[in-house]
Structures are given as C-alpha cells and as structure tokens.
Image 1 (cartoon, helix red, strand yellow):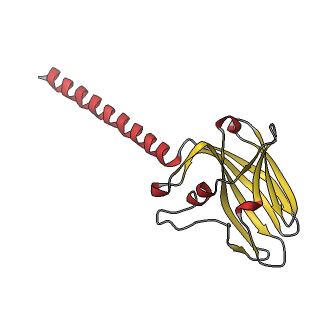
Image 2: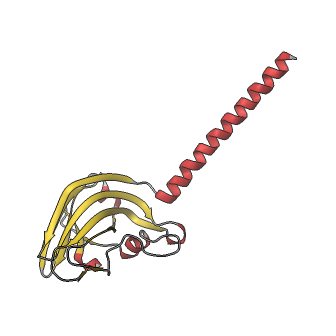
Image 3: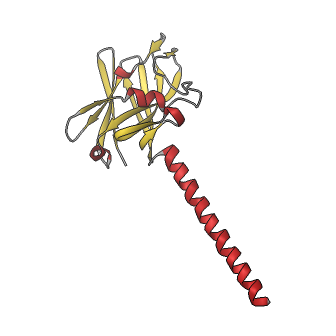
Length: 182
C-alpha cells in the first residue's frame, strides 16, 4: 500500500515538474515574440548640439529583430538598431523635427542609412494605434525636452560590435554622436 502511495506522489511530482517547465518555456517564447531578440547598451553622456536649435542626447542603443506589438508589429529586413534620444530645443522659437534630421553613418564602410520610418512610428504606437513618446512632427517649444525612439534597419553584419555614428542635421549644420553596437 505504501509503495503505491509513493509511486503516486512521484508521478504527481513529475507531472507538476513537466507542467512547470512547459509554463516557463511558454513565457520565454511569449517574451521573445513581443520583444524580439533585444540587446541593450546604455549610452551615457553622449550629447551633440546642432546649430543653435537642438541638442540631442543619445540615451540608449538596442538591437531587435522586430518592433511594435500586435497589429503594429514590424519585422526587420536585417536587424533594427533602436536609439532612445532626448531632444532639447535650445533656440528661442518653436521647432519641429522630422526624419530628415537623422542619419546613421557606418564608420567602416562610409555607407549612410536613413531612418526606417514605418518601424520608428510603429515602434512607438500603443495597442490602440496612438503614438507615444515621439518628437517627430511634433512642435518642440523653446527650452523644452522631448524623448523618443528612432529606428534604423541595418544589415545583420553591421549590427555586431560595429562602429556607427548618429548624424544630426539642422539649418545646414550637422553634429554627430559616435557609438558602437553591442
């Protein structure tokens, strides 16, 4: 009688362990589905001033295979490099930023990449399709700071420990912030 009871306990233990492993695996896969493969690198103190209008602070660099969630999910052709920026209007007038102000320079090859506009926009949408934390095509008041992400879709080989430079242009002047992908 005691052997049967012990066998039942062991059998229940194995079933519970198997279910726990399946649950952990499911949570891992769900996290991968929503976040993609993300590598994050904090960038501290990387600030560039562009003309007398803007200063740009590069706060974080991420890599991802997709951005957005739900119906706004957008996969990368290569690998997304997502830059978290804080922009400050240093002029005395209202200014508007757009995607043409930012480019990414590959310091090894000299190639220049433009923003992945669709990924930049979709990566900042909530589930209802409302833009969150963006400074694009929004007015930035004098002295005001705005934060947001910009996304570049780069070939996979460019994203592995590669020296890049964020180039910011405004009023015919430019500044840059060098960084390395992780």
